[in-house]
Length: 244
Image 1: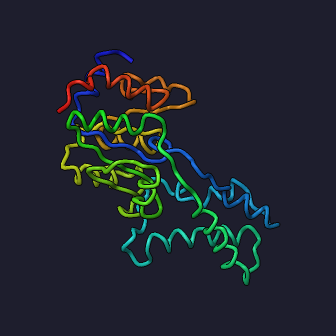
Image 2: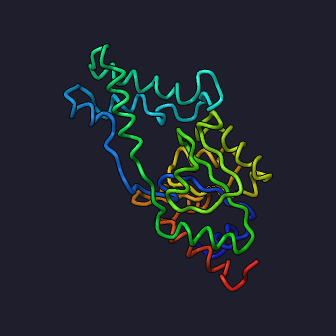
Image 3: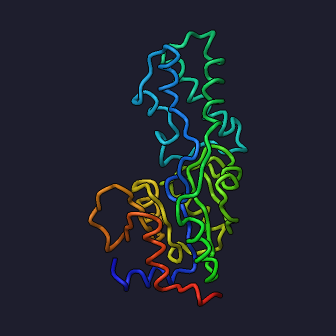
């Protein structure tokens, strides 16, 4: 990553982060629903579950937490259809669905290495910090669980009623931060939801690509293997000694 590009990123007044895969990783992982259905003796598969995952509806408007039906009810209806199509008898659908959802509720997140230090670095230099996530339930308990600090603004799909890469959720986080999209660096790990969505919404995306191969667009989308690598880039231009 060239020094000039790092300097440009460091000069941005606002940074928005994706949540899962960017700032946090699994602490307590839970098996996917299809796997639990198979364990219970039903016929399910990853391909079938993918049809009903909220991610299967990426880029569309959805009910929000205040709608009728609510986002939770919409989500539950999708999972109910997965259970039915996996061969669960009609009189057992609700009990099996309840069991699956209780299993999913055991999920716990932890902050990835450097998440806290990166946010601290940006705070030390008076940068505004937001969170923008495709997340299906109130997200605040998970932030506390992972030990993440307070954000200046939070947008998550179940609350906004739109999933990244839908323009609405990017507009929502920018409005909450009082920021023009051109002033916002958006940091995420998912190419289509985070990078493509942010770029099309006028934000400046940074891709935390992990094990993925480069897309060859680093001149438009700065890419780093880890969040720690991104932090190191910024730290060269935001020295800790120069606290705001």
